[in-house]
Length: 231
Image (tube, rainbow, N blue to C red; front, side, top):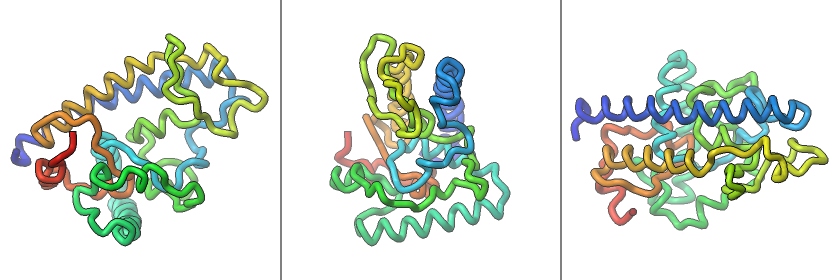
């Protein structure tokens, strides 16, 4: 696909995906009200987990790029420079890591078990400790800190931030439960549509890191070749 046909489709899809992410934010806000700020420290301006490397989907990467494009040019340049420095480190570890910087062809244990002691700040973290593209941040950033328990009781994640829920077991709090099965199904549908636009076929997952995701050229990623063999 050429740039003229690709870009409008991606922009429309990203707008719909961002609406889904806003539903996640609304759930988180309801949890804050229901449980109280003394039990949930996670909120805008907290940067305890904004460090190291963790995987995000290429869908989230494209949304992040939209947010970065709205920053002052000087800040954009600084963000990209920090991202390129991080990429250099990653290519020393994985010499075969090439554009569009996809993780799925790498050994799974290599990128899903990143060091916990990596204190390198996210390139999108401002000097004030706040995310500079907060409205465009990935799904995982919005979910982190609270367990993800569906209304049915099904657990999609039992993890929660150690700074939250002092003396309380959040897994037993019905106020935190939400439509996670439906939300993740919707997220998967968006990813299927997104990868179909990029690669010509739907893929179950297509991951990168935040620094590398900020450097992806979505219009010239040679996606069909880069995703050959992936499902």
